[in-house]
Length: 247
Image 1 (cartoon, rainbow, N blue to C red):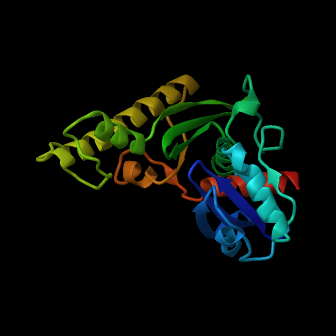
Image 2: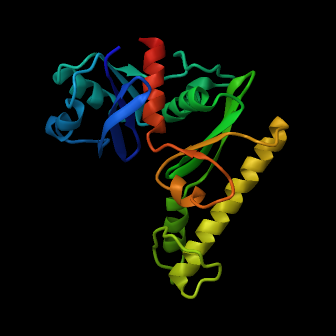
Image 3: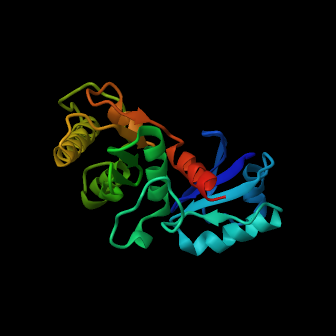
């Protein structure tokens, strides 16, 4: 199969790439609610493709993307859903409620790490998707993401500023910004550690493969004693894997 155009439509921005033989290349980004065809044409037409596969968590913009794909002469898109073959079973009460991005992450996690394993996505929300050796995708855990933490502190307090995560080895803050950054890093690591340990206990294992994606994955796992595979293209890779299985 030649390249598959893979698209991950998020609440604010979307990622577009080209998937072939397990690899994602030529990744670009644009606004999910783009205003004109010219806004997306450069990243949708970089290479000839055999198929288009989309994972969207913003149903209201799906028609806009379908129209853009059609106007650019690209193949009719396949939208990721729980009804497709994912390469891993889904054991979930209402699978239609699982976000398409999480299904793509599960497909990639199962392909790359096998089961049992866990996929962490560090975005606006922090999600953990759990892959069981027998049941496959069986559910997950959702926590506030780092952006929400910083936004909330700045919004709900009079004196705390809005800050961004930065690398620091300090344990005690010597100013307000540093104190907030340390609190986020150590507190977030503590939350992630506790969740992963609970999952190990639940599986009855001492080691549990972990794969991470999202903008803050490296910030959390760098120089940490918990090992994880960090793949910024994981969701797009999963979209491509699902495309291979269903086209």
